[in-house]
Every structure is written in C-alpha cells, then in structure tokens.
Amino acid sequence: MNKENNMLTNAYIKIKNPLMFKPNSINVECDPENYDFKSQQKKYELLKNSLEPYNIRLTMDYAARWSTNPNNDRTNRYSFVVESDSLVVWHKHESDAVRSSKNLIYFGKNKMLLNTWLNMSIQNKNVVIEEMRNNN
Image 1 (tube, rainbow, N blue to C red):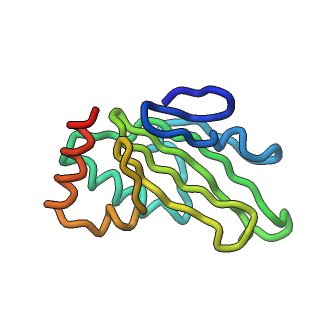
Image 2 (cartoon, rainbow, N blue to C red):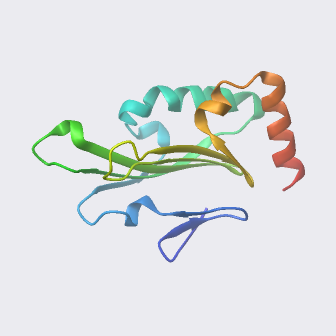
C-alpha cells in the first residue's frame, strides 16, 4: 500500500493510516508475525491459514493502540491495517465509543466482514479470490 496524506491506499481502497490516528498511541509498523494482535490473534491465525491455499501472505502491519482510560487496561483500543503481497487487506478499527469497531477484509475492490470470509465455504472463497485476480 502507498502512504500519502495520512492514508494507506492501493488501486481500490483508501484507509486512514492507524499510525496517524491518535497522538498518544503506541504505534507499530512491522511484519504481522511479530505483532501481538491481543484479542484478534485467533482471527489473525484463521485469516493467515485461510489465505495460504491461494499463496497469499500477510506482509505488513500498521497498528496503533491507545486507552480511553489510562487507569483501566480493559479500555485499550486497537486499530490496524494488515496488507498482503496481493490486493488483500485486513482492516480492524476501533474508536473511543463503545461497540464502534469494524473488522473488514478487502479483496481488491470487494469488501466484507472478516467473519463472513472466515465462515465462507471453500467454493465461495475460490470465487472471491478468482474475482480479485481477474479484476486486477
């Protein structure tokens, strides 16, 4: 993805860069294998495993973590963008508001909830990947 004007972009999407999200956040730019996804770790593993049959590897993580209440560790919020070596992008976004999170995955210009992808049949996943590759 390209970084421009506090945004992460590719041919199809534009996402606010989590590294620019909060002034008092802990920011990380790294290989996702070296990042602690906390409550999203299982989702990361499931996503990584679901992409392996298509030879798609998650390559870069842009992440921010902050707290809405520094005295309570349970109020930590996370926002990250994980890109791949193709046009697959995972975007987890939380804001300060309760229940304000989004957990999306992009396949080129097609966007869906991460759980939708993870619960899809192999046949439907094949269609999504084929459409992404044909439209690139």
